[in-house]
Amino acid sequence: MAERFFLLSLSILVLTFVVGYGAYAQGLESIDIGAAADNPGSTEVAGGVYTVNGSGSDIWESADGFRFAYIKLSGNFEAVVHQISTELPSEWAKHGIHARQSMDPGAANAQAIITGGGGGGCQITWRDVDGGASSEFMDSAPGPWKDIECWLRLTREGDDLHGYISEDGENWQDLNFTTVVMSDPVLVGLAVCGYGSMATVVYDNFIITQNGREVFPYMAVEPEGKLSVMWGKVKS
Image 1 (cartoon, one colour):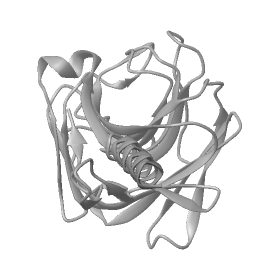
Image 2: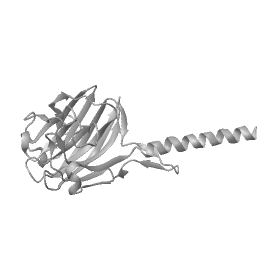
Image 3: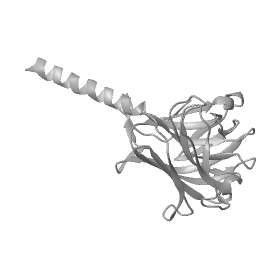
Image 4: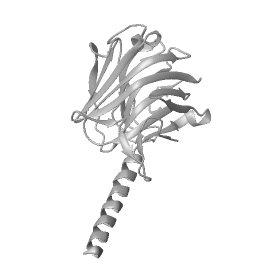
């Protein structure tokens, strides 16, 4: 009986460790994609506030260069973030919620972004095949978005990706949607591109949900058994 109890307890301990470690390992990762690696950016998280610095050539044409803070997801999702402030050094510097197939600079992608003024100040852009040309919807919701606090939202339903923007996080303006076929998992997160210089964007309330369940940020159990909110768990 004592031996069976010991084995059962050991099994529970191992299972707890594995589940906890797996959750902990799913924190935010941050990298420089493409030409952004020549002028590395950074991602800092403190108390739920994200400060992302990114350079890079652009997120456009057939290859991208930018700073990307992301998680991997499979299936449908809704991602929302609150823009606190921006320093976008040129008209086509940009930032926003970005989903892409891989870390390859030419990967298929779609994004809901705010610009330094180009395209009406916010838009949805996409590349529907790896290495292909990029496309955009312009002037869907023109405004001085880079200069005010506002909210961005990107959803994925099947192969359709839909962008939205809002002044208050409740009343949303439609940026339109596009169809981009990407196999699971996809990379979903925050993109910042300085368009040849360094841009800085400060966010909070970055939340990703699937089927009504919050998948980022979330509570996780570290391997040593301590509870940890996934704010600030950035791997780069």
